[in-house]
Length: 110
Image (cartoon, rainbow, N blue to C red; front, side, top):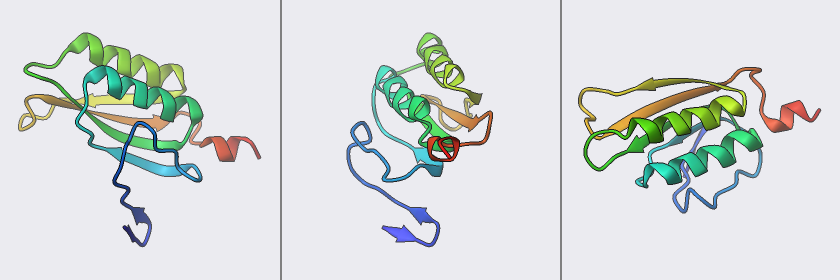
């Protein structure tokens, strides 16, 4: 579904590749934390999004080690990362990321 500047894509988040880089990626997939790190590695190293908001869900309390690995993946790829553990979402953490140079791969290849 597409509504103006927002496109909703339903499908396998782990095999999806955008046809062109995007300004924003918002992902709320239900997956083990390791899989979320894999997703971030694909998106961040390919520079497919300038900014992203991704949730990481846990069974029980957050796994801070897994969270730190995900943050490390994004930071290594050149993203600033902010992490929020919202009170109402006891078993999930939200990662907010922004490319430090503000560019996607498509822009940096020009």
